[in-house]
Image 1 (cartoon, rainbow, N blue to C red):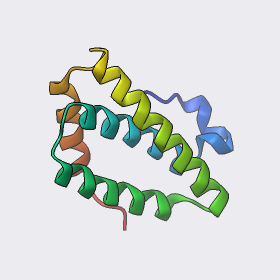
Image 2: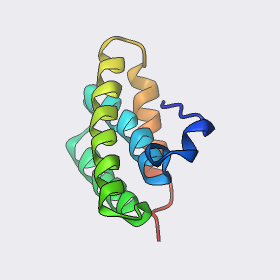
Image 3: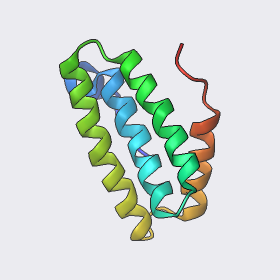
Image 4: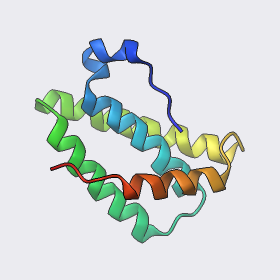
Length: 104
């Protein structure tokens, strides 16, 4: 759902933790707007938080990732509500995210 260009990778805002937070936030937001079951959203939330914490190199980076994730959740929800993302696509993206390996 989220497209983040490689040019962002050079800035602190484009760190792996921030990029992952943005990517997953849009998926979670769209799926939530499409009424994905709470159990799925809670489970993926835990997985995402664990992954972002593992990637972040500092507390400041973790905070930037948290802020970007929250913004992306809102953006994903707005896209689903506006019909820019179908619920079928949102729920399929959530399923794909659930199937991704957990960070070690």
